Image (cartoon, rainbow, N blue to C red; front, side):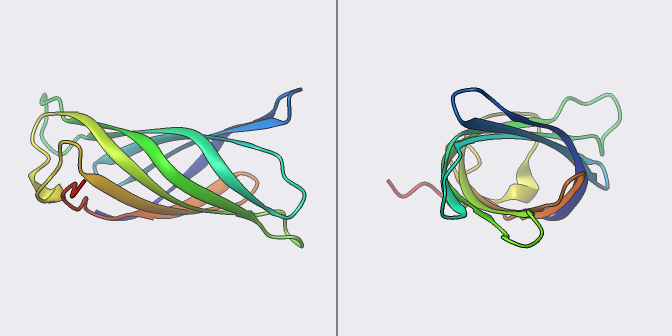
Length: 135
Protein backbone atom coordinates (compact mmCIF):
# COMPACT_ATOMS: atom_id res chain seq x y z
CA UNK A 1 0.00 0.00 0.00
CA UNK A 2 2.85 2.32 0.80
CA UNK A 3 3.47 5.84 1.98
CA UNK A 4 0.70 8.30 2.80
CA UNK A 5 0.82 11.97 3.91
CA UNK A 6 -1.74 14.35 5.27
CA UNK A 7 -2.96 16.80 7.87
CA UNK A 8 -3.69 16.60 11.56
CA UNK A 9 -7.39 17.46 11.54
CA UNK A 10 -7.94 17.37 15.30
CA UNK A 11 -5.87 16.92 18.43
CA UNK A 12 -7.86 17.25 21.62
CA UNK A 13 -6.98 16.69 25.27
CA UNK A 14 -10.03 15.80 27.36
CA UNK A 15 -10.50 16.55 31.05
CA UNK A 16 -10.09 12.87 31.98
CA UNK A 17 -6.54 12.81 30.54
CA UNK A 18 -7.49 11.15 27.25
CA UNK A 19 -6.01 12.52 24.04
CA UNK A 20 -7.89 12.13 20.76
CA UNK A 21 -6.16 12.50 17.40
CA UNK A 22 -7.71 12.58 13.92
CA UNK A 23 -5.56 12.28 10.80
CA UNK A 24 -6.65 12.65 7.17
CA UNK A 25 -4.50 12.19 4.12
CA UNK A 26 -4.03 10.75 0.67
CA UNK A 27 -1.70 8.95 -1.65
CA UNK A 28 -2.72 9.03 -5.30
CA UNK A 29 -6.37 7.90 -5.45
CA UNK A 30 -6.29 6.55 -1.89
CA UNK A 31 -7.91 8.65 0.87
CA UNK A 32 -7.23 7.84 4.54
CA UNK A 33 -8.96 8.83 7.76
CA UNK A 34 -7.54 7.55 11.06
CA UNK A 35 -8.47 8.18 14.68
CA UNK A 36 -6.50 7.34 17.81
CA UNK A 37 -7.00 7.82 21.54
CA UNK A 38 -4.70 7.30 24.51
CA UNK A 39 -4.21 8.33 28.12
CA UNK A 40 -1.52 10.89 28.83
CA UNK A 41 1.51 9.25 30.44
CA UNK A 42 4.55 10.71 32.13
CA UNK A 43 7.27 8.65 30.47
CA UNK A 44 6.81 9.74 26.84
CA UNK A 45 5.22 6.45 25.79
CA UNK A 46 1.60 5.33 25.82
CA UNK A 47 -0.47 2.38 24.75
CA UNK A 48 -3.14 3.29 22.22
CA UNK A 49 -6.60 2.61 23.62
CA UNK A 50 -8.86 2.96 20.60
CA UNK A 51 -8.61 3.70 16.92
CA UNK A 52 -10.29 3.33 13.59
CA UNK A 53 -9.13 3.48 10.00
CA UNK A 54 -11.09 4.17 6.83
CA UNK A 55 -9.57 3.91 3.37
CA UNK A 56 -11.34 5.00 0.20
CA UNK A 57 -9.99 4.11 -3.23
CA UNK A 58 -11.10 6.57 -5.91
CA UNK A 59 -9.15 5.00 -8.77
CA UNK A 60 -12.30 3.74 -10.51
CA UNK A 61 -14.82 6.52 -11.30
CA UNK A 62 -18.33 5.97 -9.88
CA UNK A 63 -17.23 2.84 -7.99
CA UNK A 64 -17.51 2.56 -4.21
CA UNK A 65 -14.37 1.08 -2.70
CA UNK A 66 -13.94 1.45 1.06
CA UNK A 67 -12.08 -0.50 3.70
CA UNK A 68 -12.76 -0.27 7.44
CA UNK A 69 -10.41 -1.40 10.20
CA UNK A 70 -10.27 -1.26 14.00
CA UNK A 71 -7.16 -0.76 16.09
CA UNK A 72 -5.95 -4.06 17.51
CA UNK A 73 -2.84 -2.77 19.29
CA UNK A 74 -0.44 0.12 19.16
CA UNK A 75 2.08 2.27 20.94
CA UNK A 76 2.75 5.97 20.81
CA UNK A 77 6.07 7.63 21.61
CA UNK A 78 6.47 11.37 22.17
CA UNK A 79 9.75 13.03 21.19
CA UNK A 80 10.83 14.98 24.29
CA UNK A 81 12.39 17.82 22.30
CA UNK A 82 9.95 18.40 19.45
CA UNK A 83 6.72 16.99 20.87
CA UNK A 84 6.27 14.99 17.64
CA UNK A 85 4.52 11.64 17.91
CA UNK A 86 5.57 8.25 16.58
CA UNK A 87 2.75 5.71 16.28
CA UNK A 88 3.26 2.01 15.58
CA UNK A 89 0.00 0.10 15.28
CA UNK A 90 -1.82 -2.92 14.00
CA UNK A 91 -5.35 -2.76 12.61
CA UNK A 92 -7.79 -5.62 12.05
CA UNK A 93 -9.80 -5.24 8.85
CA UNK A 94 -13.44 -5.10 9.88
CA UNK A 95 -15.04 -4.87 6.46
CA UNK A 96 -14.59 -3.85 2.87
CA UNK A 97 -16.77 -2.64 0.03
CA UNK A 98 -15.52 -2.97 -3.52
CA UNK A 99 -12.36 -4.49 -4.90
CA UNK A 100 -9.36 -4.39 -2.55
CA UNK A 101 -7.37 -7.00 -4.48
CA UNK A 102 -4.10 -5.01 -4.27
CA UNK A 103 -4.16 -5.49 -0.51
CA UNK A 104 -3.45 -9.17 -0.90
CA UNK A 105 -4.93 -12.23 0.73
CA UNK A 106 -6.87 -11.98 3.95
CA UNK A 107 -8.49 -8.59 3.40
CA UNK A 108 -11.48 -9.62 5.51
CA UNK A 109 -10.24 -9.82 9.11
CA UNK A 110 -6.67 -9.48 7.89
CA UNK A 111 -4.11 -7.50 9.82
CA UNK A 112 -2.93 -4.14 8.53
CA UNK A 113 0.28 -2.81 10.16
CA UNK A 114 0.86 0.91 10.16
CA UNK A 115 3.32 3.53 11.31
CA UNK A 116 2.79 7.27 11.55
CA UNK A 117 5.09 10.22 12.29
CA UNK A 118 2.90 13.09 13.51
CA UNK A 119 4.03 16.71 13.84
CA UNK A 120 1.85 19.63 14.98
CA UNK A 121 -0.10 20.06 11.73
CA UNK A 122 1.13 17.34 9.33
CA UNK A 123 1.86 13.65 9.36
CA UNK A 124 3.40 10.99 7.17
CA UNK A 125 2.99 7.28 7.46
CA UNK A 126 2.96 3.87 5.94
CA UNK A 127 0.39 1.08 5.73
CA UNK A 128 1.41 -2.38 4.66
CA UNK A 129 -0.73 -4.99 2.92
CA UNK A 130 -2.57 -7.14 5.44
CA UNK A 131 -1.30 -10.56 6.34
CA UNK A 132 -3.84 -13.37 6.68
CA UNK A 133 -5.29 -13.70 10.17
CA UNK A 134 -3.61 -16.74 11.69
CA UNK A 135 -5.54 -16.66 14.95
